[in-house]
Length: 137
Image (tube, rainbow, N blue to C red):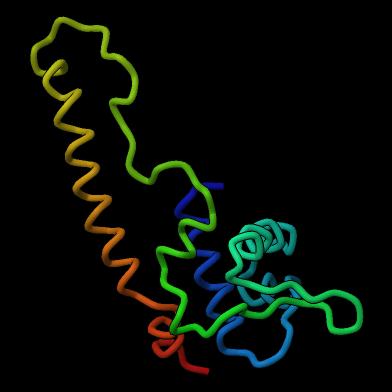
């Protein structure tokens, strides 16, 4: 699944957990999102590994946020997914004598790094609580 799709599903899943005050099953989240529970479990397992979500088993099985929504930002969620770079390109050695293509080897990575820094700042400044407030119950 594409990194941006996993990220979107993670944000939605985490928002559900922030809105509900009980342990939530992956089946319930998946039904609300309209996807397979296995996909939700794979995503949530990464969030559990990053200590953003707590997993409960036995009698009280399900998932819950591991800390308050205002203490979780979107960059935390993205980093938990351990996805490949959102912005990538020109990573391979260019096999050409074209001066434009040769010049692009340094321009594109620098451009993408600048974009990544801007996006990372926006994600860090946006908390799960900010997202949750925008969603009606």
